[in-house]
Image 1 (cartoon, rainbow, N blue to C red):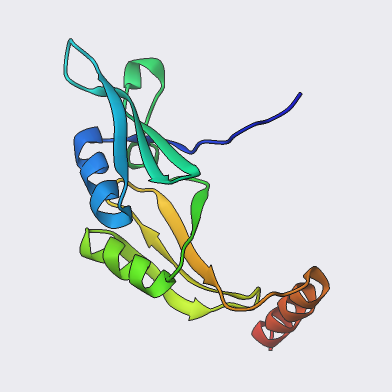
Image 2 (image 1 turned 60 degrees about the horizontal axis):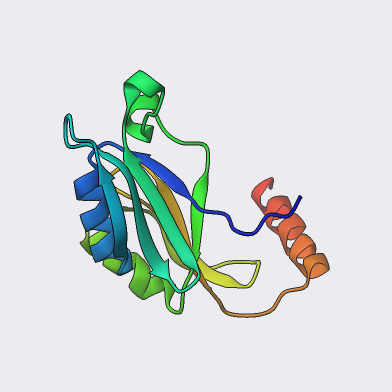
Length: 151
């Protein structure tokens, strides 16, 4: 078996508004959408975030078990965007309506980044590289950080 691509597929409450948010916050370009003829819900949409990044989404379909984070009380994952300027990307997302959960800061693993929650309940970690850190050094910094926190 070979995996060729992985696509985040978001389930949202309010697909039209979500597409508008991702366009404004991340510069997404809508590739296409399939609209349910019976009620206008978005059954499937694809958005291009960059040359190599596609985001898929659909409205909720509770009758099919397709529920958003707002319906299930949160989500157990986040999407990580690696960008040129995390501070600017987080500011742009906040201006578009995201809540900043963790403002941009320099991280022990060699990235400057922060975390937002979009208006549809999805968590996004957004960062950019500030240094190359080998895994052993990352582990040393992790251990030191946790040792400091336990004091």
